[in-house]
Length: 406
Image (cartoon, rainbow, N blue to C red; front, side, top):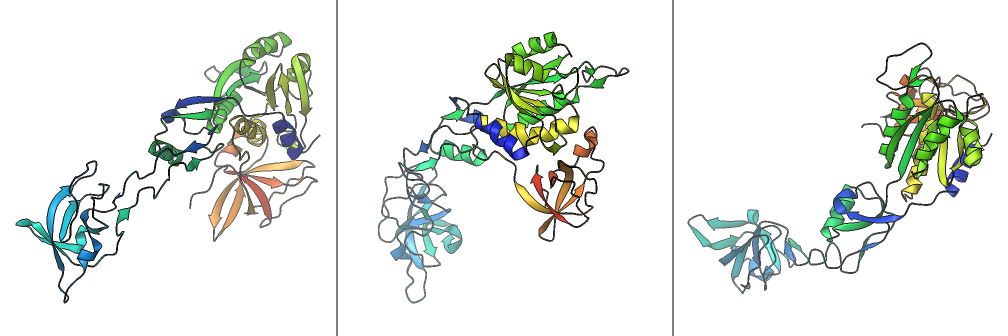
């Protein structure tokens, strides 16, 4: 058996990001930029007001003998419009937030610091002196022409979408989403809508992995259930080979009907199988033809945990991400882990913040068939190899699947 780290390293070394495509900006969320984005213009493109108020010359706001300056109002500038009028000594213009600064003005005073006569809007009193540049957004203050605003490899989220829209990037070059084939195996598997019969179980893995693949950023396609015959597996794999990645569940152990490894050897190669971990020891990675195949165990919890450790990083590398793994934190294990195992144990747990630290409580029975142990689990607590236990209150490393609410 090999370690989790060695398996991850060997798997990811064989994977390269997928080709780039150019798509509409609205479709780019969650993808990774395939090239730098450089601004073609200054932003803001012109000096504009940061407040509703009056554009004026700062020198005209000086008080004489403690009396407010009184300026003549010569017009109004709304956002989206440009005026040909210029500010001259002793004058001001009403200005709205975002409106271009008129010629001659070097400051804007917010309306709260002025006083005017409701019956005569042609004059305004300035109640406070202001300095040059007051409440002015300078041209290029945010982004300069020629500036690299986003780098190749950046993940595109809502904020990045906003910046790309700001610089006029209507189409973006990104790494395309992987197409992932999901194959469940086993004569005992029936679809979720079918009534249970003796010896049968529902195809929970197919649906679990479909959701997990989609959340990881790829496009999943369930190809149904391959029966425990080589003919059935070959038929399903012939469809799966049209995808960028194949993920199977079941069929990678040592039983007489665990045929996935046999077909991998026949049509491709197995790079490794069996990982020194629990749950999830029987895991295989290799290729069918030229398509990478990740063979996960059949037990649902094992499939879920091994997907997080291997499937998700693999998908993220195909997508071009730089950060492939979930974050690690130190947690205090409130209830401890008393079960000994020679393999590294990934224990499902719920982590919360408490007085500036992370506190974990396991989610109950940790059998690889206990799907309810996944519910409310936002972390995998790592119990090291060698039959170690965690006493209540001891600390351990945990992989965060989701951050606890404050």
